Length: 301
Image (cartoon, rainbow, N blue to C red; front, side, top):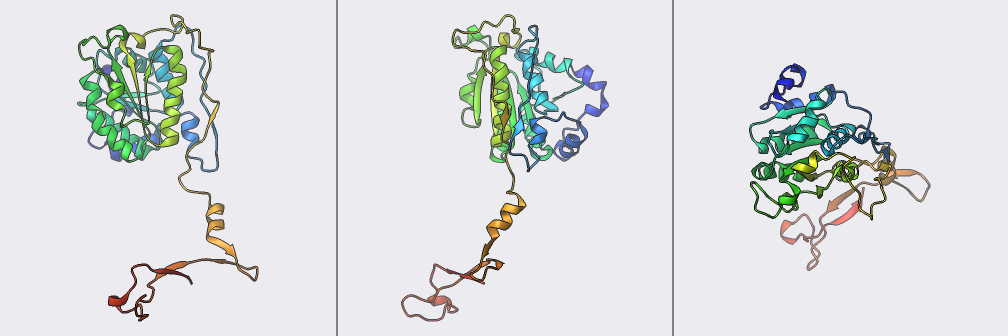
């Protein structure tokens, strides 16, 4: 994976200067016109949700990465580990569309994903393996959460039938991330990933925060053909549209809020300033600080 990245100098990232570089990188990397790019258009109240038609030979990791690309993600920051090898392989096969940036510590990966989200105006994505790798993300994810940065954190877990058995590096990452993440879920298979990854990306962008998805190592490589739906599954899909957040109200709404009609029918701006009220006990001038009322009155200019 690292060798493949070295052959493409344009995807090489200086870790020390990444936050400064993130805005320029996001503008330079051409992303498809998707819901991620539609969110910047203040005039749009709804945007189409990316649609996918994966083939039956695609596995959960393929669906995960394809969905991230469709939502406008251009970089994934993390460290390769055997608990996420299928995801890393899915990234390698799509390195012309999304770059995997290897870091020296998972905490740095979370901070870099937050930097991409804050300064690049798109999804930030970080990836960590099971156990300690997932735990190391937490500090950077809190930074992203407190700055309302849309970040998708992906972690691996041990084999699905070894959970709760004190298997090597077995950590309940759902419980670990429940305080920092707006959405915190475990992907159970490729068909589940079709809906859940869409929901995660939409939640991160619409609600401006961190979401977390964890996937068992064997589930990561399960194909759609091998996934057997439950009797309750109707093959549903997520909604076809979503509402991007609006940073500021439209200019016409701001003007309407700042102006109102006067009795003569003319329109004038209403400006308000705080004027200290006279002392309630003696009625003396409000300019005398010793007698000022603690509650100012509001008067129109």
